[in-house]
Amino acid sequence: MHHFFVHVNTPSEKIDRRGAPYESSIGRLTPGSCSSISMFIAAMERRQTEMNMDYADLIDEVEAEVVVPVHGVTDEAKAAAIAASLLDGGWQGRPLVGVDYGDSIVAMTGSHRYAGAARAGVEIPVIVLPQSERLTVEYGHFGPYVALDGFRLTDDTERRNALRELAAESPKDAKLAAAAELLAEECKKNEE
Image (cartoon, rainbow, N blue to C red; front, top):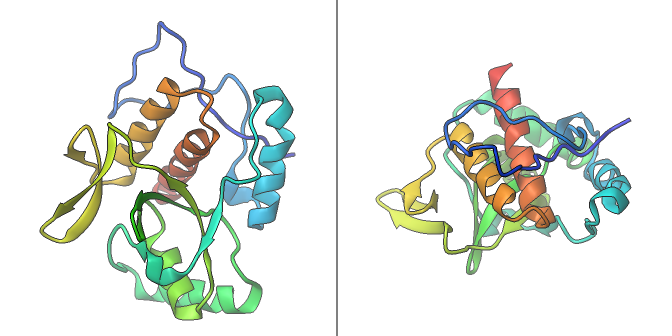
């Protein structure tokens, strides 16, 4: 059984962008453990009544040319294996997380999944977050990047903690909650 993992902030908890992992008071869904996007959505929808959230429109399917990856490919064999897997069975696993940047989406995760999808010519499932007063897309020397309060988010841990902080401030924002958990999965996967 899969559960959706969401951190619920209580007034006594402090949010630290570089702090220790948060604990859940609701349950746990590991999007990476789902074999498809439809399973991920179905598992999230099972939590809809308890959390009073609607997950039907969380994930957008977009063409690869719309996505600006967080960084280039660092493992060519990994990107090639993902492309072959996508050609064989379609998208399997976590969607990307990105921030709306007008005609494009600046990704916060999934550079190798992005590269594999681009090579395979398949659409990419993305949870697209809107820019806000705190979460913005800035333009630097190497192109657009995601920032929190004007500070560039340079790695998955910073991005995860930033989204958790924003999700704690907006506990009814389903996209933000799901995006924070997807970043938590990225961090966990990168540690393996």
